Length: 64
Image 1 (cartoon, rainbow, N blue to C red):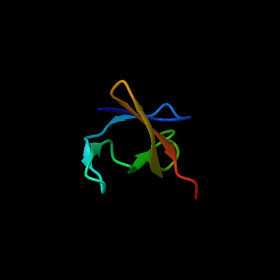
Image 2: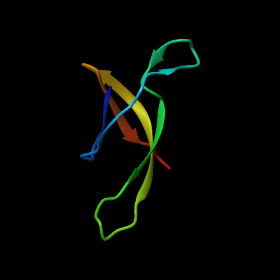
Image 3: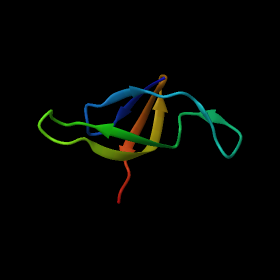
Image 4: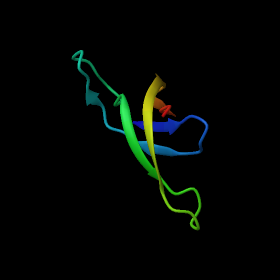
């Protein structure tokens, strides 16, 4: 399924995962390495699941 990061123009694919309550769905936490510009080093983002709509999972950057 497609996944998008809220506030960034980053899109990627995720596979459904088995959750602790026995249901399946997009992973609740994802780590993503993103290079904002070829001149800058890659940044590691920790994302948390926000919502799922029309087979698209939405993630937000976790607050540190």
